[in-house]
Length: 219
Image (cartoon, rainbow, N blue to C red):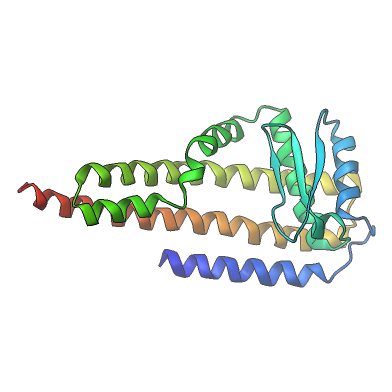
C-alpha cells in the first residue's frame, strides 16, 4: 500500500508540474526574478540565491541561508516555477522567524537524513546475520526517519500556505495564477505524505522482523 501511494504521488506530481509548466504566469516574471522580488518584499536579510544546473533540486538551505534554484525554474516564467520558487522563499521566512518545526526538521535532517537510503539495508543485514542488535539499530533509524517525516509535513504545508498568501498580497502573481500554484504545491505536499506512509510501512516490517528475532534466542 505505501508503495502504491508513493507511485500515485510521484505520478500526480509529474503530471501537475508538466501541466502548469506550459502555462506562463500572468506577470511574465522569471523564477529568479520572483525570488529576488519576494525576498525584498518580505524584508529578508542575508538570503543568497544560488543557481543549480539541471531540472530539479530547488531547496532552501538554512545552514548558510541559501536559496538554491534549479536552472529550469530560475529561467522559467511558468506557473509551476511561480509556485515552486515562492514556496522555497517562504522557507527562508520560516528560518528568519526561527519557526520551531523548521529548526527541529533541520536538526533531525542533519543527523538522520543521510541514512534514509540505508535504513532498510541495515534491517536486511540484521536478518541475514540473525542479529537482534543490528535489527534494533535498523528500527532506531526507521523511527528517526519517521519522526523526520512527521515534522517535515507541517513545515511544508505552512510554507505553501505562506507562499500563496505572499504571492497574492505582494501582487507578484496574477489572480488567475494562484489556483495553478496551489495545485502545484498540493501535489508536492502529497509526496511528503507518501514518504511518511512509506516509513510507516517500513516500521511495520521492522517490528515483524524483531518478532522473528525473538525465536532466534529461544524467546
